[in-house]
Image (cartoon, rainbow, N blue to C red):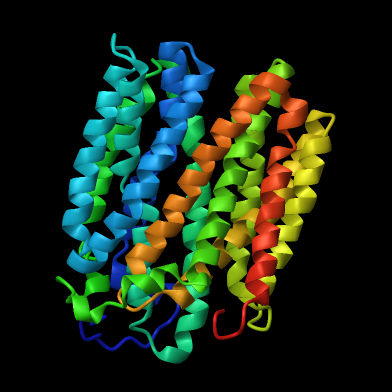
Amino acid sequence: MSETPASPVTDAEPTGLIRQAGISYFPIALIARLPFAMNVVGVMTLVVAARESILLGGYTAAAVGVGTAVAGPLLGAAADRYGQRYVMLLAGIGNALALLLMAWVAFAAVPDVWVLAVAVLVGATAPQVGPLSRTRLVAYIRRLPREKRAKTIQGTLAYESAVDEIVFIFGPVLVGALATTLNPAAPLIGAAILTVIFVSAFALHRSANVATGGGTVKAEDQAPVSELFEIRVLIVVLGMLAVGLFFGSALTSLTSWMDERGAAEQTGLLYGLMGVTSAVLALSVAVFPARFSLAARWVTFATVMVAGSYLIATASSDFAMMVALAITGLGVGPLIVNAYGLATERTPRGRSATIMTMLGSAIVVGQSTGSAIVGTIADGSGSAVALWAPLASAALILLLGLTNALLRPAQR
């Protein structure tokens, strides 16, 4: 992939990156990804309230994931080829309209299939701010002296993952607050407004096309599409899919557990504990020694998640659940940072945005699928059974990490 000639940069510290991206970039990129974190929970909350069907709500959440799975990587591929600016503007406007349409169709006298169709549209148009933000920042970092890049990339990916944790914690909380105090449709209307303002600002920011050198990239400057489906790439995408399954199963089973205890409204606060420890340890990744390889980190932190998930499944009190969630979070944050680090190393030439959106889409698909499956389990068998689902997801993450470690060095 061709890049615009870099101006001399001698400072690899965070201030050097800030000088390149601009101080306004970071708050814009943070708030712009909040609607993405609200979509799945907001759609499910609205449909359950409007149609009085938990089952349809779960299916609708899964439909959002389907839309993201299909269109997310395509948006990334378009951004790699033509630059992010126009792709993000079109996606943002389309997503805002889809959210407003969902707010109407949920209460309209139309068949359920139309609700599901609009949910797919919500997912398909969802702006991939998080993955594309990583693409921009990594492009800036590659302008730094070669010997300074590795540490700066680790720190930047740690920051980006911590930001993702923050928005995915507060996104569902904001949905609950708006739905409870105003109207079940309020979260989606609010998400549409945020999308129009902040996704547009993200699209128009001067960093938009830094990864493509400021314009369209020639086809011959990109690696073949087939390289996106090599085992070294797919194993990371599957890992992020399993992380999404964990998120969806953990939140849904915890909601069922709290509901049985008569405190469903406190689920967000309890779940937030995992996000806090996850974000804190994610930021610490920047100081990990180089000899602690990415392959070893995957196995290590997946093991922490397995241990924490077992404590979640066997918790018998609020305090025990709080401890279990906090311990589990110690594995989640570094694992996500690690996945994006692996993706950065293994990105085929000229396919950075595509890879990043593949990972982002995988999380959403996993979260939606996990929510739908575990919601059905909880509805039929109760939280005692549903709480084992996060352990199954964590075990899958560990299995994929072991598989990654066994790949030949050339594949890794």
